[in-house]
Image (cartoon, rainbow, N blue to C red; front, side, top):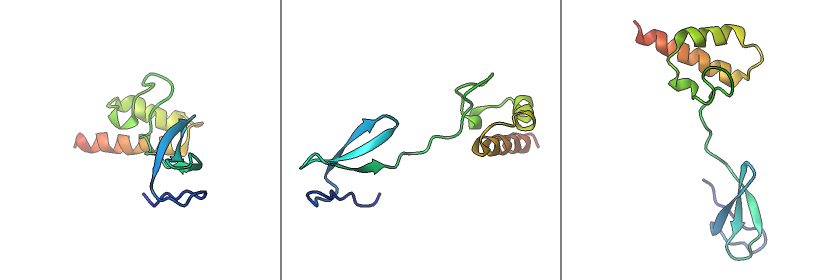
Length: 96
């Protein structure tokens, strides 16, 4: 991570974090000023609906369902569709 510098008191990398809704804020230890939102680790794609709701796509072994999802779910994010296709390919390669 790059340096976190407080614009008010110019301290560097001396902060604590605070949850703010879905974000993580860096707050200065010295002047308690908001510094910036910190980047978060990205979670792998998962289904938020249907038979495998809450499961990460990379953990689903139900090949017929994944194929059905790739062909029939037209209103899903491209990231989810790409993960489904990648998982299908992975499962088909295991079977060879």
